[in-house]
Image (cartoon, rainbow, N blue to C red; front, side, top):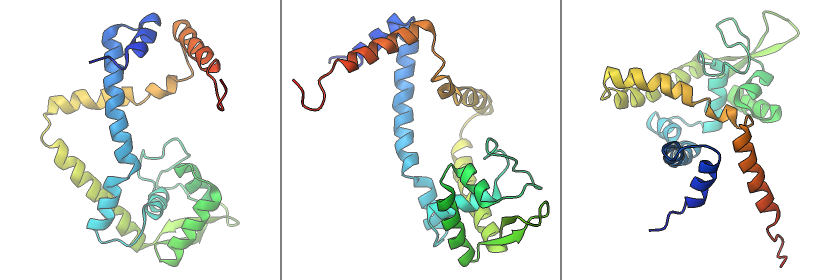
Amino acid sequence: MPDKDARIRDHLRRAGIDDASAQAAIEIDVALQKWRRRVMKRELGQRALADLGLSIDLAQLDVLLAVRAPEGEFDDAGPCGEDAETMVSTVAARLRIDPSRASRIASELIRMGLIRRAVSQQDARRTVLELTPAGGEIVSAVRAYKFLVLGSFLKDWSAEEIALFLPLLDRFSAWSDRAGQHSPEVAERISDLRAALASLPMDGAD
């Protein structure tokens, strides 16, 4: 069977990346692509809403979670501690969505009685968002559902496997941060790829 990735392996080899690392990169990408497609479909979130009998959609659930801001979940989008206040702009930043979309979904949840507007304790001119008791119960139930599923999966792992996996996962999660930080060898190979693509006939040209 022909190796469909032979050219890719050659590019990696010429950039000084050994065959074992190249193979690992290819196999990891296969796993990540499968995971990405499942995550994009939000399978776990959809099942949680269905199994818990909730009549909200995933976008509304995301906003509820952004208002609740579980510890560590949105740590790159501003303070999320117990004393932190959440505005529509905060929700938009945490979810990386347009503020107008965040405002529209928040208004829907206010009408549903899951979020309420309140006056900021830090600046009386500012309006903040808070979960109502019902909204808080929904967030707690969905998070409990997620961790029941994940905990059930992990209970079959040994303590050694978990101790090995967690730091490696944390280390691996930063790999895409290096996308713009290329070694000279990798930069040269990327330049070659760009040049080859630039010479391709486009728009039906001969």
